[in-house]
Length: 233
Image (cartoon, rainbow, N blue to C red; front, top):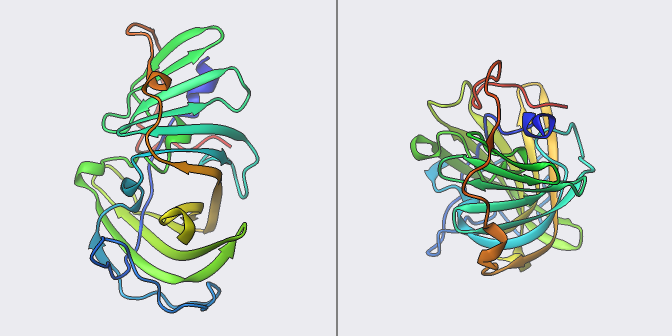
């Protein structure tokens, strides 16, 4: 159980801005333009794009902890500020409060509790979100897995983060802008890539997010701060 929870969340992500329309959506630089070599428009402070999707379910492929194109798969569900994430090995599931980062793991061996978000809650959970500054910039258009996508570069800065977190999101036009592909941009270049498939937008069954009130606490000794510890690989 400790091994499973050792990959719980860390410093998070960032954005760069686009021009927002009346619905708060960011416009793309030009239809039919390619993402490759596209010059981003000037960034501006705005809201975090993933906050636009408070209720959905999807299959998540990869995670912040896997290098390159991840291969682990598991269902994820969101209902407001709670997320349920199936453990890819089929041994249980985790529920993370996106406000506090508090997580409960309901596993075959029992229930455990930790003060950090589960790794698969990233990038929906962002460290220090209340104090975060988010910028977004349009970066072209591309088709991914049959979805026509607007591309955004996102940067999140926060006192909780040692460095600004940067991501590139491919936002599917037929899914109200839900990002079906997210790439983490690291100082040395491209980082882990997450994909989402079988996305269903809308309210989720509240019973999916129930967990025991009392669970075994995960030992904290030797664990790094969630804003600074290195993601496991």
